[in-house]
Image 1 (spheres, helix red, strand yellow):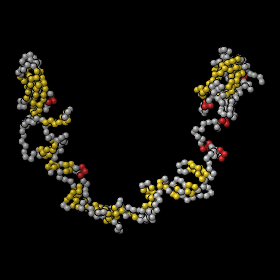
Image 2 (tube, rainbow, N blue to C red; image 1 turned 180 degrees about the vertical axis):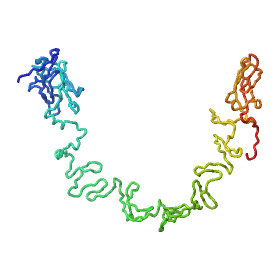
Image 3 (cartoon, rainbow, N blue to C red; image 1 turned 120 degrees about the vertical axis):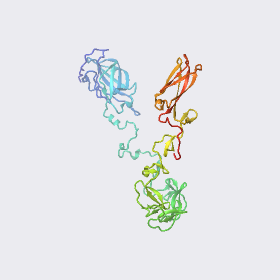
Length: 508
């Protein structure tokens, strides 16, 4: 057959192989498009490019035979020894590669890929297509060529695969498992595979008649007349039952027992004769009767006492044996003991409002102030009524080492307010202006003057004079004196300047 020349590229030569053209025919296991960077597949002959897969009787070999045809960029066949690198790709990932030195004769070469680095069968699993790439003398030919199947390789897809996970039942064809394929090791004449409740077991076939041989599981003895010795794995007693007995589980086995306790009679005609071990009176009940426990048994009685009417429509007519007046109550009324019965009446006296929202407005007929109490106030009789007031003049302080402690105020026949501070003389004088807030709580005038007390705290002892005003005071001492003093100021509280030991009348 006449060989056609490939179309060559215009790039320069490199070691005589700047543009190598690979021409591969349909391969056994590989089909290559057979062109480098230019369309040159027309040079392929019919008898070039065959791959042969080597095979032995034990395992699939890790090799594939490849034949190809190389030319330079002018279409001239290559001669001599060339270094070639073969790679199998999955997408952009190299799955296998091998470098070989091949002899090229008139452009033809033949190589058994995998002879140096065996090709693992795992790289041909499902997923992206697998492609073969060839590089000759370091120059990679493109494009890559997809590896496809040959006709007989399709058959390998049925068997050449892992068996984990196991073969699904839908994958086993009808009639595929024949008798000749079943291992007969351990088989016994007349026996079949049966489920014994825990696993599969060789057992005698019962087809054609009753089973024979030793019984098992919940049965004991031999076939065809075994004995039920257990129920769901729990032993059944061999005690002989009597008429009316029932099979009851006691301790660690099923045993026949006579009905007892709160029931009596046979199992198909039982009577309840007690409730939780306490006897029931055996009398005929009447409509609306109820079961009442008295002394040592349940007795049947008609409803009575504080209730009246049928058991499903009882009316309370008394409370602890005392009658309740039969009249309709009004909103807010409470049940009150009046004369000789409980009777609905409106709250009054020291309380006001509805019973669910009562206000206590008095104590034993004496009114209670509506003033809001403060913490720790007590109810004190003051000015003709009970009034919340503080029981002491003082407060509660938190100490670091001794917890909360009460502090008491100094009591006085008049209502005084005090303030404290310190002052130092400057060249013999010092001026103290009182806190303006303090001044608004007290009265300082000619009728109610303030009092100033000094105690020297620094410097040589000196005599000083205090000049008091309406908003403060001035301390005067010797010239060039810088002594220091603590002061205490007392003034009457505003609005109470005339209060002094007020008289408390009886009943106040």
